[in-house]
Length: 149
Image 1 (cartoon, helix red, strand yellow):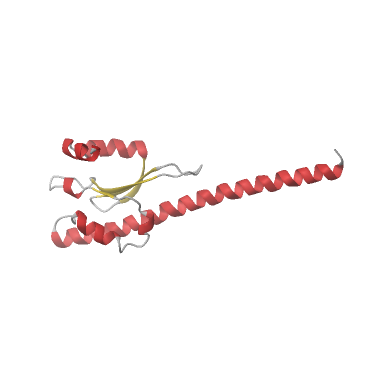
Image 2 (image 1 turned 120 degrees about the vertical axis):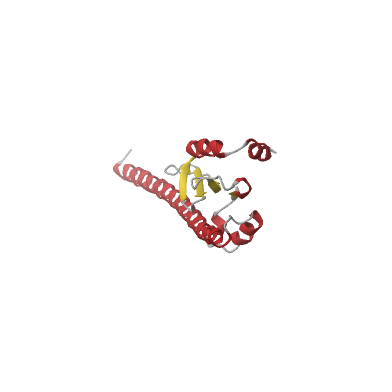
């Protein structure tokens, strides 16, 4: 192999390597933006739910949440929101999970998990195992049975 062929091969490998790195970075960036937008939409929902609770003394019913979701900025990133209002009562603690969204990512730097809205208005990211353990502690038999159907 002569010098010119070696140079062409080295340049080709460099271009391919840089291209792969850029593609991976863009996928990770897209997933990070998606997670950020979904979290922001959930925080907006949190403010609305807290205002509703302050005014009415209870959490909004599910049909109200469906109406509210249509007005949220970033709602397209929310995906399938699970709302647990029917399982919230006066004995529920502020740590109770009120709503959550499962997010899956195909990137190398972000793993899947849940964006969680707590009864006290906190919005946080949880890993899958941590979330499933917490939800299992908070769910009653009836909720589990309904979810399975």
